[in-house]
Amino acid sequence: MTTSASVPADSGNTTVAQGTVTDRLVEANEQYAAAFTDPGMDARPVLNVAVVACMDARLDLHAALGLSLGDCHTIRNAGGVVTDDVIRSLTISQRALGTRSVVLIHHSNCGLESLTEEFRHDLEMEVGQRPAWAVEAFRDVDQDVRQSMQRVRTSPFLLHTDDVRGFVFDVKTGLLREVDPA
Image (tube, rainbow, N blue to C red; front, side, top):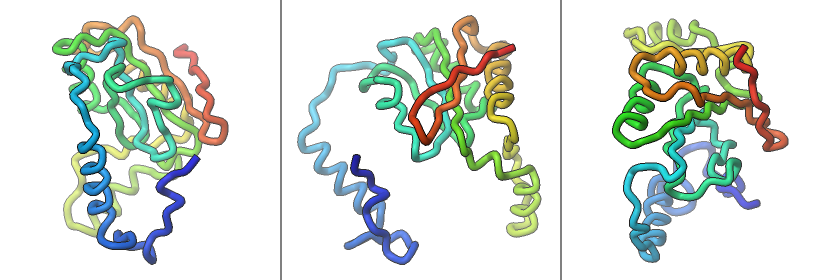
């Protein structure tokens, strides 16, 4: 498997070969758009499922779950934790776009396992303003998946909370391990 991680970067800054990483992405989009044809889909996911996952670059969710374009809504953030903004997205996904199931995916070796809420304090000291958001750091990935499942199941804004399942993706093997909600 070839990844962009195998492309050498230029001394740790944002330039790659000729231009910035963003320039490279825009160029790739131009090539993509040249062959693009409208798939004729609307915003409603074919499988009526929303997947909430960590933003970690090692997770290729569509490949790992056997999904195709249009199959699901994908909501990603640091840790894949269920925050107020995730509830907002899930609410829109369910109430306006027809999803019925929620799949939560955390992963092994998550960066949030090494952070604490002290991170916010450090930011405040650096920039002079305390972030309004919580870091949502955790030590036990299974417990954090359980907490996320509970947040979804108890949200008054969500219509469909009976099919909510949580998993931990192993970044070494690519396998999902389901977390018992109990």
